[in-house]
Amino acid sequence: KEKLGLAMMINPEQEAANAISRILYMPTALEVAPFARGHAEMVRIKLPQGNVLTGKKIADLVKEADQRMYQVKELSGAVLICAVERSGKVYIPGGDFELAAGDVISFIAPVRDGRKFLKKNGFQTHQAKSCIIVGGGRAAYYLAKRLIELGISVQIVENKKERCEELSVLLPQAIIVNGDGTSEELLNEIGITTTESLVPLTGIDEENIMLTLYAKEVSNAKVVTKINRITYTGVIDQLDLGSVVYPKYITSEAII
Image (cartoon, rainbow, N blue to C red; front, side, top):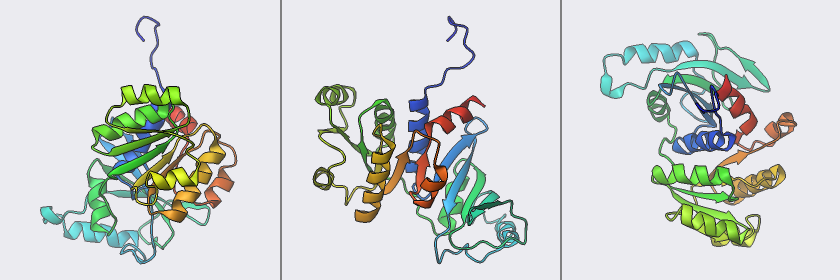
């Protein structure tokens, strides 16, 4: 970087892998975006039916937090709910705004406080323990390396034998499977019904979406879908894929 006189270098595949690993560290979240040099993060979650936050006003949450200020052990975490998505519209909630099931909430919190807030309000906060990655490209390598560092067991499915041999050397702690990652038979053999997470990283958006829909049908796995094209986002949103990662958006945010 110094020799070329560059102010910044960005690897889009690395940035996408980092974004996916943050989500698998907190699987309840749809998205986890760090800022302030990693000291804080913005978390997006979908409010399920029957959650304790349903029907509560923002002001109620503030009062509850104030009442716990001196109960350090029970502190739910310092959070700021900054946006709520509902029926295709985005709201900046005031104190009288009432949360409802199906809302997608974005909140900002210092690192670790977000997990405290989720745990206090009935969300699962443990990280995924196992992951199947479909596709063995650069993003898969970066992601698998990071997940292994976090103690997550990893299987990578890749259809090119030569690439499988490379990955087996680069990632000796991962299980590398040579085969068609879109095959239902193969996915069932390697445990798609029991894995805690699945990340389709093929180079074809349609395949990634198909794999996501299949996984949601046959398992309870946390699925993170990588989509390269940034068109048709409205259609993709209607599919309710859950966590979707767009490398182009992530790269632009990193530059800003």
